[in-house]
Length: 495
Ligand SMILES: Nc1nc2c(c(=O)[nH]1)N[C@H]1C(S)=C(S)[C@@H](COP(=O)(O)O)O[C@H]1N2
Ligand SMILES: [Mo]
Image 1 (spheres, rainbow, N blue to C red):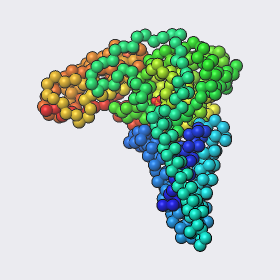
Image 2 (cartoon, protein in one colour; image 1 turned 90 degrees about the vertical axis):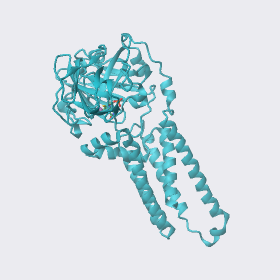
Image 3 (spheres, rainbow, N blue to C red; image 1 turned 180 degrees about the vertical axis):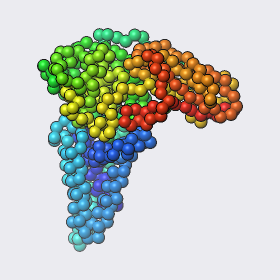
Image 4 (cartoon, rainbow, N blue to C red; image 1 turned 30 degrees about the vertical axis):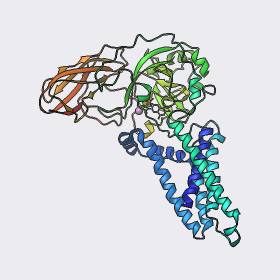
């Protein structure tokens, strides 16, 4: 027990320091490295089955492992092997320290990066020494020994409560909110038209996904809290003139407002990793024109504050589509989880090749000269979004009343647009669904389908046709390496 208290105290103090400095909590430093090291299939499985729950679970797993080792150390210490116990605590602290050096982190400076792990290491050693302190004849009865123990209990209680409060504030999105509150969302130079009315069928994905409901995919345990006043984007590489842009300079440029649907390559057929938002941002083509792209360049390598890299075809940034450095999402500054203060958004490409969150570096280069985070892990270098359609209601295995019924969902084929959605009941003919009005070629379209439900079990299948007339393929493919395909279906019980 003593060992666990010592380790818990060290981790709680470390968490507080991490919260203050923005440096990695040693547990997260280990966790991020575990994420980077896990082979593709394990990571895919984690994303699929655990969703965003994989983050807390990874932390719990690491803490549980630590608790077991610390308990053994404490037990040894209580049996006279105090040096061993302290050495184990030091060893664990050192592991955290080493991972804090090597793993990806958003920490601003080396001191910020290493401080949480250093403090954790020192507290771990001191606390372990204290809990395994053998009562000598003098100290056994003396108030000194008692006081030290009480001191540790007090420190650990304060640290645990403090860390819990800091953790809760983060979880509630509270901590650092003043950074977002200071940002005034600018009026776009080129505003989007009025938002189309969302189809009102209970359970359908609303046309605009609220920020709090927007899917999230990234590889960090600690969401970066960047101060826009410290933020700078460097645009360099194969350009005539290198640009450095502050956040305020970005706000002063031509800003466009667009509805764009983001999609993750990890999305299974019928899966949840797609969302539509109204973004405001600076056209990337404007910046590239100003920097002057040199002959031979065919790619942009963008880097986020934690060092993660993404490779995007240069053509997708210059061919006239609305590729932007986004700074607002649905009328608010970007949420921290979605890349505050600035991220890339490129219509038509899966997020892992285009949607760099917390972007800090933008290098014009050649695909032959670099490789990026996800492509190093087996995903395709080029990844346009595949035409997809999804049934939102009825949910799979829902029970539906016999009689007139309604099915509804969304379909997307960014850049091309959706021209038709059809639904099939069991093995019947394909029947047209009703489509919501077109917003633009880069957003999903909601659809509804009225059918007469008869008693029994029925299977509904959906397919879409893009605006070039191409039918969505029924060939099944897994997300790896360049996106899932196949038709979504749902089985309902009618009574
Ligand atoms: N810095 C950073 N940016 C990132 C990622 C990431 O892991 N780190 N993941 C990408 C992936 S795979 C997707 S699908 C989108 C998801 O954006 P969202 O979390 O805002 O929905 O962000 C992209 N940008
Ligand atoms: Mo993704």
